[in-house]
Amino acid sequence: MATERELSDFLVGVEKRAFKRTVYHVRDEEAALDIVQESMMKLAEHYGDKPPNELPMLFQRILSNCTLDFFRRQKTRNALFSNLSDFESAGDDGDFDLLEAYAAPESQQVESAEDSTRRAQVFREIEAEIKELPARQREAFLMRYWEDMDVAETAAAMGCSEGSVKTHCSRAVAALSKALKAKGIQL
Image (cartoon, rainbow, N blue to C red; front, top):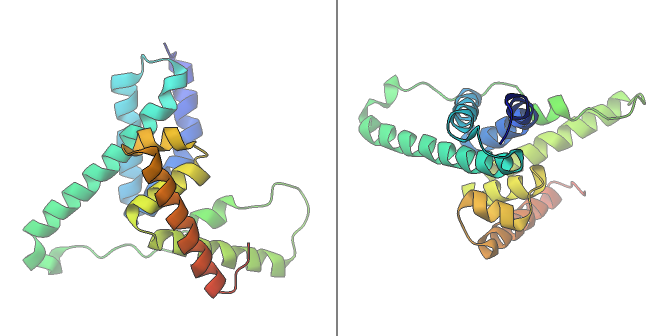
């Protein structure tokens, strides 16, 4: 049974990664923040009494479900208001770059302006290509390589087979590799 402190520490630790993953999915920072907050509230309300080692998987599943719910609501709203598109707000194309904000070097070494600019450009390119992946590939890729989840955990969180996770990840890596290589980026 998780204590209040353990639950709080877990939520603080997962917040930034969950936000980044959700921003990649919904491509809207405000909606992503709402989804992450809703997921955290559901975890605390319904599963706060679970053992601490079960919290990561429960949270990933809740986050995935809340994200799917967001897309379902969007689809319904778009179907209802397709003729009233003038009243819909335009997407926020702000210049917030989450990868760049958290990609500062770990060491205290001073980075040249040229290296810093090059690194920021590469991160922007990678971020843009990740956003272009199909939703399921992006979800599998982010869970496996950003969240560092294993295949079984990713499959459980996504509600699919381990084979599907491997296929989605393989296709995502191939697509990213091809797109970045076409832009002259070698990792």
